[in-house]
Amino acid sequence: MRKAILIVAALVLVLSGVAAVSAYEAHLINVRAHVENAMSVTAKELEFGTVFPEEWLLKEFTVQTSGSFCKEDQLRVTYIDYAVWAEWKPNPAGGYYYWLGDALYVGIDSAIKKPVAAGGDLVLIGAAPAGPPGAKWVMDAPIPLHKITPNLNSADLITLGLDVPVFEGFYNVLTDPTPKPSGLMAPTYIIKKFLDDGSPNPLWNPEGIDLGVDIKIQVTYIGATPPP
Image 1 (tube, rainbow, N blue to C red):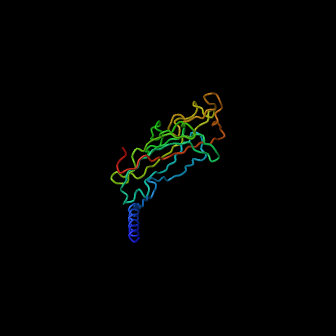
Image 2: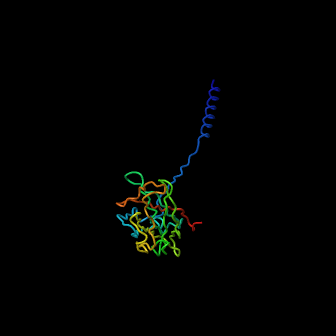
Image 3: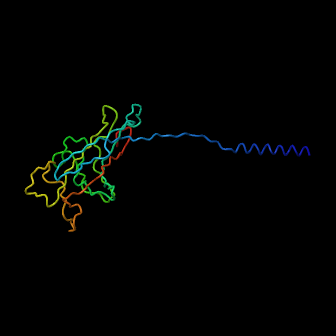
């Protein structure tokens, strides 16, 4: 009997040892990241307000590298590239505003703040994209933003030029003076009374019409070397 008891004890010890060997290891890796924007924009909204046919009006804002991007000890990435896009503008009352891009020009660090057709540097956004909603590319940044000298370019000035549309029937090409305030020989956009299919144009309202567009600054590259 005593011999049997010893054998049972030995078996218990062996089984216990197998259980200990089959346990799993665990190692904890603490992973964290602090996320911030690499670029900042000095304007969230630009309001031209009430405007009148053929006025040439300018609004400007700056895009620049953010404070965290420009910290002295942040050298992992030094270049930012971006593009300018135009999007249908939602109307808080519902739906979307009528498209303003047919009369709105854009430039980056422009020396001559007139339309290209008038000898300036500003590019017309032009016809609306499909939608709404929808967006269209307008231009790429001519030079990436860069935080280190001698190639320092930490900010760009974006210029918006509005050549206020005219209403058909309230504009006469034979008597209207030229050039216009925009420098062009004709209005950028004439709001027609009827569409091409002969139906009434909902924009034609000489008493006043609200137009809008959203300008989006889209970052396209962040890196330690110039974009490819």
